[in-house]
View 1 (tube, one colour):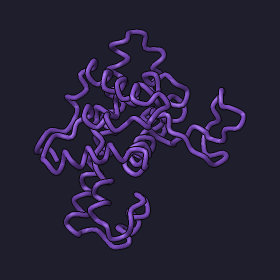
View 2: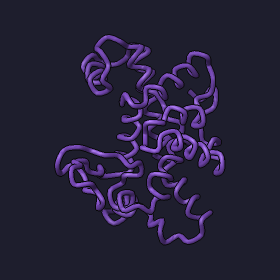
View 3: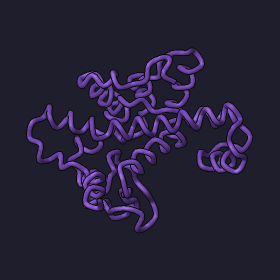
Length: 217
C-alpha cells in the first residue's frame, strides 16, 4: 500500500519522454485531474458563500486569506473563482519547461512560484547575491496547484485578470484561458511577451477544449 501511494504522488520523469507529442500528452493528463479538482472545490466554496451556508469562522478566515475587507462578500467572490484549465496548463508548461525543471520534478512547483522567508523553499542556482527569494516547494501536486491558484486570485499583480473574469461572469460569457491571459502581464519580467507566449501555447496545443463551458458552472 505504501509503495502504491508513493508511486501515485511521484512526478513523472518528463525528461525521459523523448517523443514531444507523448511528453505533452503525459504532461496534460498529469496536471489536468488536479486542476479540475481544485476548480471544483472553488465552485463549491463560491456556492456556500453565495447561499450563506458557510460558517462565520470559515468566512472570516477566507476574508483574511484572500486579503479582502471583512464583510465585502462581492469582493471576496471576485477573488474566489476558477482559473481556466487551459491557462493553468499553458503556464505550467512554460514555467516548468514541460515538467522538466528540477523544481517541478522534485518539489511539485510547476509555476515558478517564489517564497521570501529563509528556508521556505529552494535557493535558485543563479540567484543574484542581493536577492533573498527562494523557489517554493510543495509536498504534492495538489498543494502546488492550490497555492498557484490562490496566488492568482489574491495577488494585486493580477487585479486586471480578476476584472476580466468578473466582467465575463457579469455578462454570462465563458471564462476562458485566452481571455484571462490578458491579465498576466505582471507574472514575468518579460511583460506582455509573456501574455503572448501563454496564449500561443493555448492555441497551438488546442487547450481551450479543457475549459469550462456555459452551464458547467
